[in-house]
Length: 344
Image (cartoon, rainbow, N blue to C red; front, side):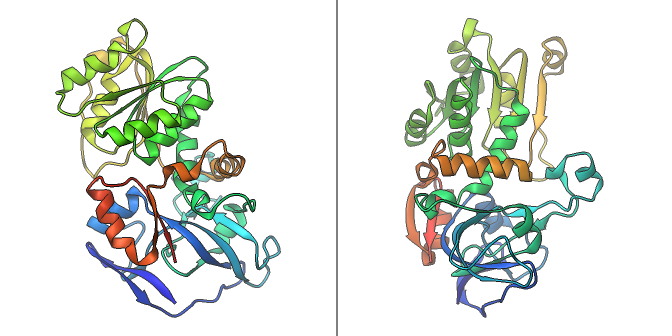
C-alpha cells in the first residue's frame, strides 16, 4: 500500500510499504481523509524526538476512515464502521495519570501513519480514544479531532465565562477553534492576526472584532488590542495560538488586571519569553501553559464535530490527493493555506 515515510528533516515521501495486520486489541482503518497540522510541519522541518524516536517512521496522526479489519478480542468495533481516533492514549498508571493530569502522562501511546491508504490503531487508543462517527459527518470534517481535543483542554483551563472579553492571538486552525468555542461559551471574541484571509475566517467562526497587526510594532499592537476591550483595560482571557515566544509576550501584555493568559502554542525547545514581573505581581495575572489532551476532552471534541457545533470543514483550506502531502506542508509554511485534507 501507499504510505508517507519520514526519514529525517526535509525527507518525506509517499512510498510502497507492506500492509500491517492488526494485532490483539487493535483495528485497521482504511483512511478516507487525513489532515495536516502544525506539528506535521514542524516535524517535517526539524524532526520530533518524541513522535519519531526511531527513523524511518510512518507519518501523520489526524484521520478518519472505515474499519477494514479487527484484531483478536475487539468487540467495540466492527468492519465497515466509520470511525475517528485521537493520536494518543494515556497509560492510566503513572504519577501524572494518578493525579488526573493525563495530558502529562509519562507513557503516552502514540499513533503515527495516518498519511496512508490504511493505518493500524494501537490497542490503548482503540480502548480509550476511538469513536464511531455519524454517516452525515464527512471524513474530512472529522479528521481534525486531535487538535480540537487539545483546544477543548485549553478552554477547560481558561475559565472563560459568559460575557468575558477574549482575545485570541493567531487565526490559524487552532486559533479559529478557540474563537468558535469561546463564542459558544458566550464570550465577546477578538481575533488578532496578520493575514486578512485568516481574519475573515475568524469572523465566520464567531469573532466580533478582528485586528490586523501586519506592520505594527509591539507597542502599537498592545494599543490596538486594548482599544477594543472594555475600559481599554485589556482582555479577561488572552489566548496564544501561534507558538512563538514573541506572541506569548503579546498575549500576556494584552491582559487586564486579574486576567488569565492561556499559553497554548508550542515553541521551539529552550525558547525563553519575558514577563514584566511588576505587572505580574501588582496586576495579579494568571499564566497557564496548556499541552495536549485527555480522553475526556477527546469525547467532547467528537460530540462537537458530530453535532455540527464545530464545522470541521471550515478548518480545511483544500482537499487534495495523498501524493500532495509535501506540497501541502510547503504551502502551509508559506501561508498559502491553513490545513489540508489528503485523500488516499
